[in-house]
Length: 558
View 1 (tube, rainbow, N blue to C red):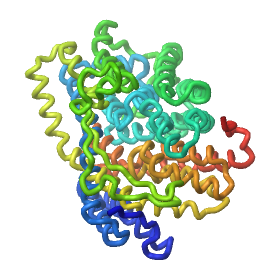
View 2: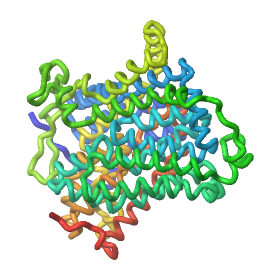
View 3: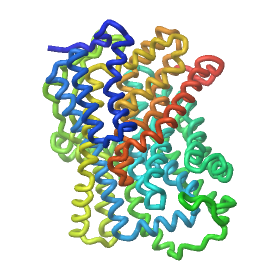
View 4: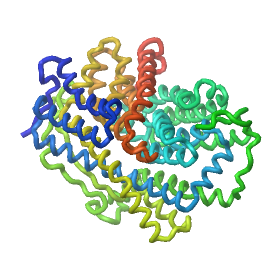
């Protein structure tokens, strides 16, 4: 029997909304203010979510349990798999001494932590977001910054702040593609609309990062580099999104930004160096050479070149189809390399109802895909395996490093599984839609709140793609009812959602894991939450202006 979503089970929109928000309030409250570990807070939030789903919203108990198991499995694979593979590669670089050479080579460009954050967290992180997504940018850039001498807390927070502007085009345009399928709008038009919004934030976010770690004085000392870093990425982002499409926006933008900034720093340096713990020091031009030869530097960086090539190749549609046993070129049957399992007690048992969907009743599918060969984490693992002989590490030693890495990540993997279980219960029970419907009651001000709905969706699910799948139809229905442009409002779900990426539980745990800050997720959340909310509000203001005096910025529908 199919269970239909009920979005106002208590007969009062505001009371139902308050009850639906309890799992999120419990999770964030225990994590940020009660000092609980991520694992304990996630399990408590999950228990509350299941209780409300079953006891208040009427979800069948077996379906709620199945949703939790489905979410936990997704948390372990593909999310956890990415973290394990990325940290394995990082540990290999540490063990071989390559990380120290990398650190010195980055300092050769600049010893200034402000500029290193731009290079690693923003530019390189944007490339990784476009090629892999799913937590890889945060994990890898945060780990690299710790290796470069950043305090763990700062590295985690900066990686999260940087991983915003690129997210709407992440993983080869998947969020935009998903939004187009859900809403029925033209994919190229959504891409162009996002390209008329996010470049402003691609300019803002690098400056925001620098201010967050070094204050206004720190920004004034490196504003030319900030302008080069953000400006080149914003320019490529606008051009690619508007005239080419969503797939390669972040990949091309990240590479162009990284190379341009590196070349710029060869001829320009700030008047004084700023580093965490040391403050201001001698002018950059007085720094000594690292003493490493170009060959040594190339040797040390090559594992990350392997990584970049692998994650980009793994994301290409043709390669992915081949690795999943699809298409004419398939060699291995799909059931072997990408088996799909219908989740018992959940698949086909739940129906999304209007206004959350434009259909009379939309049956929700629950399919778990174990695409072990085409997963981004496998691409990262391949890069790590290729790096083992390159770094001169014996296979037996590498195997021990892998086991140590897996053991060290045990608690973090449990935390991620619990976080995703909570997210899946929230989505399957319809409580997320109840929260979203509260924002649709804002009437003429809805253009401001539409991005905040996307922000909420990403904060709940940890994915801009999932937020678009969850709220895309609701955004279009609401826009049409209020006489707003559906293209503008639906795109705002994705572009506003990117600001929620830094506070979603999955990203918080990934950043804590990558920087060795186990059980200190609450500190990270408290630091980044104000930044996330402020940037989301700025996106809301931009969308509100584009619905009024700046309506000329909305592309014409094809």
